Length: 83
Length: 155
Image (cartoon, rainbow over all chains, first blue to last red; front, side, top):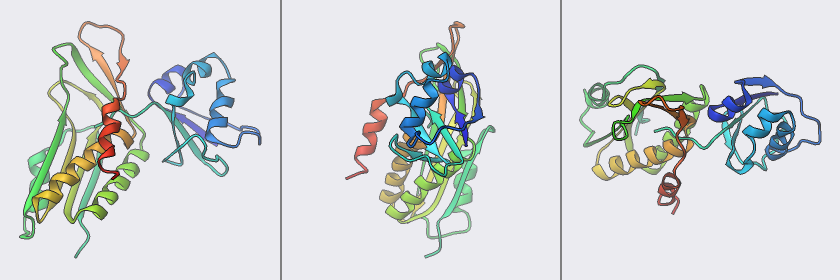
């Protein structure tokens, strides 16, 4: 699946998107945040406050307990500040 | 009743509110109310050089479309325009436009407010501030007040 990052999540990780292959034990969006946080300092920094992170699966907002099975694109970003 | 006249645009270019109103009202006699909201870039007490707006291409259009569909199901709207800009915008520049038309004013007023309240908290856009003093650029924080604004629509 493809992970995409926006705003300060993108800046902290240092990339806009990447292909990821989490193990089967990673079931939910929250699990994926935990798994990504282990990938290095930049990820740990981006996800240091998991509760603040918003997520979308295939361009639809989801909560952290949403399952990631079948997702093609998972986005992580801060609370939105448009309008 | 035919489907509302709807257009959603995510664009870098500026928009013309008057032209959008004209497009929603010309040649029809059923529109009794047009409510327009334009959000502009403030200079924050002469400290801001520009705002830079990042968005999630694809999802921005889809999420705004979902919010517009909700508004259309709640109020008898005749037309809706939502234009949200991205990229660098200087103080005084336009950021967002919402136009709602209906036969009567209450639906148009309420729908325009509803659209803005939901846009602010659900549309995937993020603002970064560029300061005039050259200080490090920083992301604008989301406001609790924007989340609270949604509560009145959830009753």
